[in-house]
Image (cartoon, rainbow, N blue to C red; front, side):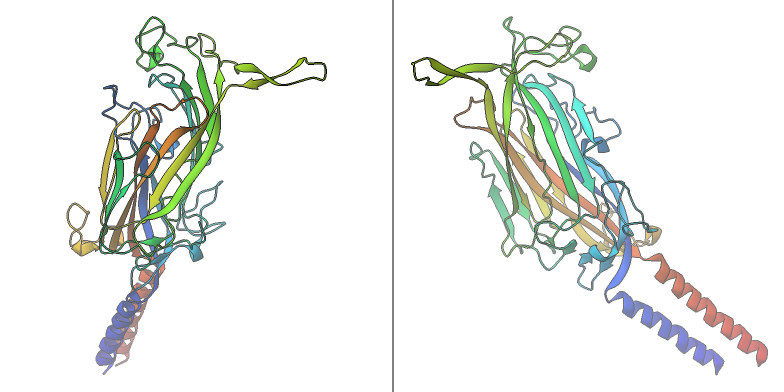
Length: 433
């Protein structure tokens, strides 16, 4: 009789456990987020892109090595619904000063080691591209993050932009016929908010010409592969510099009713003209011109000095996530780019070998979810300023999120303890009988 009761209890326990797993449950996850742009070549000048284009750039072990992506590890606790939605909000968010892990801590139960804009600043070698006098990439990343654009901190399989395919020509002036975002939706096109706060800016300096009066193309310092003077071509040509006040930060969007742009980024910045600076890399001084703005009562000219400036616009387009296929392409500016990525959503036993699947469940993983989305951006001069960005700069890339989901340790432990307890009851009962 006891054995029958024990068998019924164990069956009931397992049925209860599996029934609970078919309902909304709190689970743990590990994973990565990978973001970047560019493709390392080819370029219009025949030279590859030698810069680190990962976002944020300080995520790379060597921030000066050429790269098209940067990858950050993720971990945390999330609520998973029956339909596969992931709700990060109730279980803690990352913050700008400290990382958290699944053990919990001040501010929540999950996250990553965040990158803050105050310390994530990477100055790149001058003249690594003949147009480039200076570039300091400023980045940041937080996961999970606060809400964005009125959405909630979740990824909803049901709230995406729909099925089908999209070919979206990049809409910026000068891009006509030269770039597009392509999306073929998978089984789930995820809406909601990618819970990542991507922040950043770019301090950019562009040379007014790319060759000296002697006719040679501007060279980086010899320490970075230049073949000219040891210090490169500092002190030879005027340049414009300015701060683009934002970076690609809108990957992940609120739900749309049709497949299309989720977020459109737009910002403007002033670029001021400078003298060449010193041969050892010291910065130049602002170039100003006198302008007559009127006359006095007795006819004397009123002269005011103005800095020579160029106003630039930074624009970007961002889209929903999908478990399908995404592609970014552009042929604008110095480099031509084509980047592809594919997503998936599979139970671990059903994942293919390329998806890291199989019959086993490494580290207790029960589900793997990879989401992809393309993005595109451009920088151009605004009239009536000089045409500094000629050709204008075009770039873009991919964002890829991979999550490995497993039951929360506490639920597994309780199940094991419950079974062990039942066997203990069985042993006691046998002794008494």
